Image (cartoon, rainbow, N blue to C red):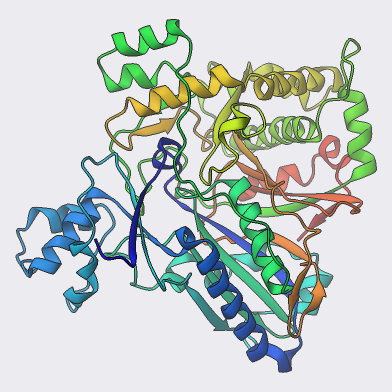
Length: 522
C-alpha cells in the first residue's frame, strides 16, 4: 500500500443506494467579462474541497471494475475472449481500444473486493474533483436575463450540455466511478453550475453539507468540519424479525420481508441502472409549478384532522395533492387515447418518497457518518379513493394523513430491519415495488437540504445566493415530482413534475389543481 493511497469501504446503505447520478443546476448571474476569474475561483475552491473531503475526489471501485483493470495492467486485455473484460463491458465499463494500460497502475495498491456486494472508495493524495467549463454564450437559446424573466423553466435545463455523457468523458470508466463532478456552463450573462452527484456516496443530507462547505470556501470563510466516516454499524432489529430473516434461505424471500422492496431481475452496476423498474423510454414533458406559501398554509389548515394537535407537514399536503391530480391526469389521458390499462382498477395506487432517518433513528450513531441514510417510504391507497381526493378536500385529507403515517413509521426498528435485510444480501439486487410508469404511481422527492439562503462569493457574480435550483434533465423520469427548495423568506414554493405530454396538458387545465397553483413556469 502506497502511503499516498487510501482504501475505504462503504456502508450497506451506500452499497444498496440508487446506482445513478443526480443532476443539479444552480443558476447565477455573471458579468461577461469575468468568466475567466469566476471559473478559476471555482476551480481553486473545488481543489480546497478535495483537500478537506478527499472522499469526494476518489474513485468508486467494484469487483468487476477491479478485475477488468487487472486485465489491462497485466497486458492481457486485448484477448477478445477474456471473461473479465467482457463482463466489465456488459456492466458499463467499455474500454476504448487505445486505452493506456498505465492508467490502471492503481491496481498494485488496491486489493480485489471479495464479493460483488463490496464497494471500495479509492483515494489518492492530490486527486481533485473533476471540473469542466463549457461555453454556450452564443448557442444556448436565451440569455441569462431571458432565462430569469421566464422563471427558469425546466425546458431550458434539457439542453444537451447538462447530460452526463457530455461532461463525464472517458476518464473514470475503467479506474472507477467519480462520485462528484462540476461543470460550469457559461451562457450570455450567466453561470449555470451543473453538479453531477453519484447517489452511492451520498444522500440529500450529505449533498446539502457539501454545498454549505463549498459555499463557505467561495466566501473565504472557515467551513464547518464535515463528517468523515463512510461506515456505520446499526443494532439488530427485534428478535422476531431476525428469526424470520435467518430462517429465510432465498434472496427473494429476505427482500420480501420489507414490503416496499423487490428483487431485481439482474444485479445492477455503478453505471448501468437499466434493471431498475423506474426506467422508461416513453417520452415525457416537464413543468415547474409555483405555489404561494399563503395558499399552502390554507391547504395545511384544510387538511388538518380535527383530533390532531398540529397541522400536517407541507410535504405531506403537497405530495398528496400532486399524487391525486397527476393520477387523474394520466388516467384521463389514457382514456382519451383508448389505452386504459384494466389492471389499474385492481392495483392500489402507490406513492413513494425518500425519508432521511438521521433525525428519526439512531441519532447518536450518525454524527460522524458521511453516506446514505435514506429509506423509501411508501403509501398505498385504493385507486378510486385517490381519484375522489382530486375533487373532494375531505378525501384528500385522508390521503394526507396516510402520507403522514408513512413518514412517522420511520423509527429505529424500521431502519434496523432494512439494514439487517440489506446486510444479508449477496449483491446489488435490491429494487422497489413501485413502477412510476403506471399512471396511478408517483415518486416524489423534496430537495429541502439545498438551502437557497446559502451565500456564495464568486468573481463576476458577487456575494449573493443562487437565483434558482433545477434538476438537470440529462435524464427525465416518468411519474416523478421534485419539491424544490425555497428561500426562508420566499413567498412561494416550486414543484418540478415529469409526465407524458398529453397528461401534462390535462393537468395544466385541471381547475381543481390550478386553484392551488400560483403560476406555471413554461
